[in-house]
Length: 108
Image 1 (cartoon, helix red, strand yellow):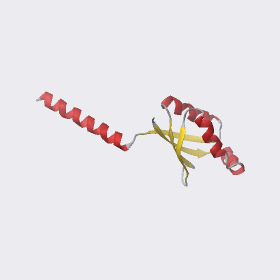
Image 2 (cartoon, helix red, strand yellow):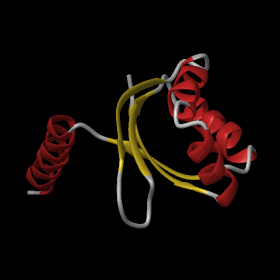
Image 3 (cartoon, helix red, strand yellow):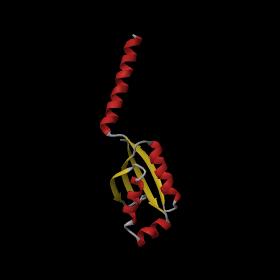
């Protein structure tokens, strides 16, 4: 199943909610699981983002819906990126190189 990286930044309202109810993080995780998205890893971080989440979703449309649903609440801003496993990435690069070599041989 496709993997996605979600970088999130809390709004002032989100920060207030988290301060009053820290367990809200786990509640949101359960909510997004109802959309068919599984949280694989989650970290609170320092810097321009507050959280880094690695999730698994069936497709781009599902993760886009989760991003819109969460963002519409006004408590978080998300950056969502598809992630390619490195072995798949290397294999795809190798395929591209092999295709180029086949084209070069055909031109000779």
